[in-house]
Image 1 (cartoon, helix red, strand yellow):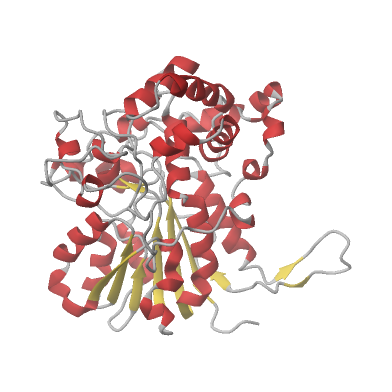
Image 2 (image 1 turned 45 degrees about the vertical axis):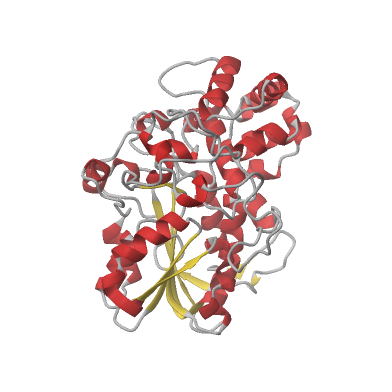
Length: 443
């Protein structure tokens, strides 16, 4: 979906993309209870949409307020730490101040290339079922050949699939003889994958929680280390294609966007309660939206008349505010930004990366799949800095040993899917894989 920061923007690169940003291609929803209460994020009124009626149990049963109101947070559901230095280092814009945004001409000039890059995110096409979905499958894992090769799972290995989803990658590791722990914040995904992989018995186990809380996993707290760790980032197609989850502006549904019940607030709460300045920041930083100020102002004006409750209400407001040109829906970047803010995706990634050296054994492998430039830039900078033996700064008489040296890069550049995979799984088009190994001993 997003081009990486170093890739030139070409006509070929901006060809229609068959997948939305941050996707793990998965299949259609199966049967779930057909009733929902009227709590925020699960509004009635969409009875004709099958996948709304098929809302996952944790979503359909949601009571008013956030999920964890008045409840102690169990391990794996803690609210991630506020945006820190590593998150803001993901992009030059993440450290920008809102005062900069007031210089509209400067913003327009500095983000003209962003608009071109963002146009490659064809959300409307991404919402169409993939080939795997058409066959009734739940999950078509991205980069399967490359993941199998670089993880190199063997009997006796302990591998953590920290973004379990439909379990496609985990199944590959299990078939190779490894023991796998699957982590996911979505109870629906965990339930499905437990049933799917039950044949592997005790070699497969699960833990419900955000991948940012790797250090809270009981086995890790007890001192166990992993031979491999996989992070497959972003929202799944199963979540995106369900109107009940509220990720897509192509279907009428409640404005929710949570990947799991531990997310502290819904998209409706964020849109209706955030200040205009905060909305501007979210749209500009996470969505790289050059019209962030105009959209934020329109949202604030509209919600004074009637608070936003559905995806189409928000999409229509954005389209009316900025107009529509070409095939790309003007709400694409805004929906991405709101989703990332609701699920605190960059904050979670920063926390997870910082924990990796405490999770892996010496020699253990880290594999990270990203789907847009903000994620990929963060992973790239993290691994580049921690795999550089010597560092230099202006004013130093000579380079010095890097005190943060922890990894060896097994692949110098990001690994992209081949033409054969893209033809069968278009949603893999924007995926990038980065691979590193924790050093045996720290120099």
